[in-house]
Length: 636
Image (cartoon, rainbow, N blue to C red; front, side, top):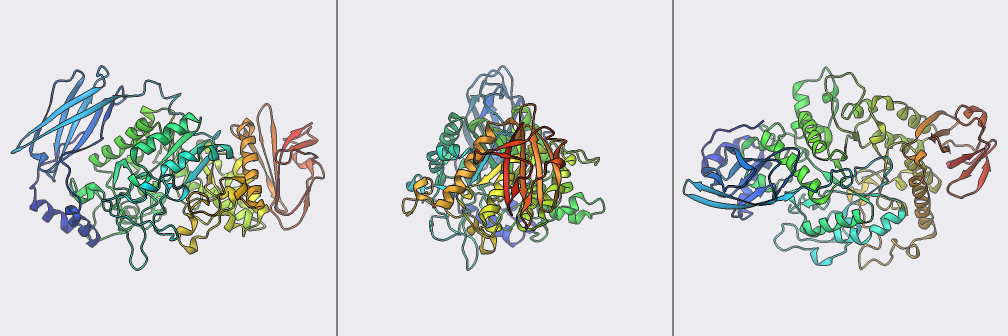
């Protein structure tokens, strides 16, 4: 897998070769290399580990003219230099290390000499966590309940890091949806008890990596507070508190018996990423004769009749001009991304990865990085953002039962199709049929329980807006979220009825959690700060989430559903010990439950305990108001 690239001309010749391959946006990016002072020597990964399954690591070393040198490792038992790769840009050198199983933790000393240059690197080898992975990296399963949040919009726990001197964006405007607001990781850590008390077991944050990007846009300015335009993988954004704050948060999450999901971006980087300001080689990113945007279409990737140019445009086109598209066919890029994912998992104890813009990445690379992560961390969970319009396309990109040439190893997807179906069922009188038929296609997945299901997220209309602020519809949606198959994810603020429509801009979907800023007049983290309706919503989520966590039938149990009739949708979650009946009237008229239709699954049950109210009801003849749901633990 290791290759040795030919040495091309350095200095001015390098840039004269690179520039013609870039569009104006790319040209402007390359010309920015004077904007950031060069470090004496920079290396990725920033450290590595002994005791890994894969004994090889490729160091990407950066310093002025280091490509003219030869690396020499001071003798260290069990460690050797296995290869050296010089590339187009002589400010880079790629060094392959072999770390045998016998190697001990300690400090490597590597000298770089020749070409009139002399550098030295002290490189740390840390011991891989001695646990076998089963007790440390737990993975995220259908037993869990995920709380998703955006650090910049959740809580400002440390106002001193709102503005960091030397960063390109030093603007904080809390009343503007497009600017940074100052939320950080300390704020998340301070409110872990709130998240746990709600019933969530897992925290998923949008990317925490440094996004040292300037304010973008034209007349309307915007910042990269969202985290998806990273400029350094190995640094957590200092405005979030940096690596120390993230390590502290990860430790606190695990100490409370909770889990951590990190948001990954393999497809692209920010245009001010340090490797873009001085690129290792011209094919570090996907190049076109002129700027080419992705077509945002998945169809060419699954269509047996698609053209090569359409397929290439989907995968190699840039997501937006400010996010250069990484060339994952380049083996150096592959090592760079894979090694960071392994490093972060081991360093912070990450339990799961949600991967952004999944199908825009190279398919072979995706299988490669998944396999590498699972080899090191057998219990790690990975699911990809596969935003597509039907189940076949979603199943195509994860482990499936399809007889097609492409065999993905992704465990599961963010299940947009179930999300769309639930939203449809809450909006339309016949929508329950769509939810039923969507779940009926689960046979396409190898294991649909590994899919992450949700009602909304940071890119979609908030669910309370989707249902037109109808509280009964809201509760019905929460009921499905917490009782259907899969890993449920709740977007922050949904539990207190936060609303927002994408037609008003992404910022409308990402408002601050009330009570997270010292200037907030209300604090909805506390019951006293919530309205009666908001508190009722919070208690509804909490009650059902806690019941779910204590009831294996709702997590690992089987699912049996019945075709909706007159808007009444009924399904059962069951195991050898419990049978849970979920009844929803998604129609426009009051209905009555008749149990004879459900005798196959509930032949001897006559009563059910409503898990929300605690009351015991007679099943046959149970009245069902419009847009009401009941979660019933069945009793003889």
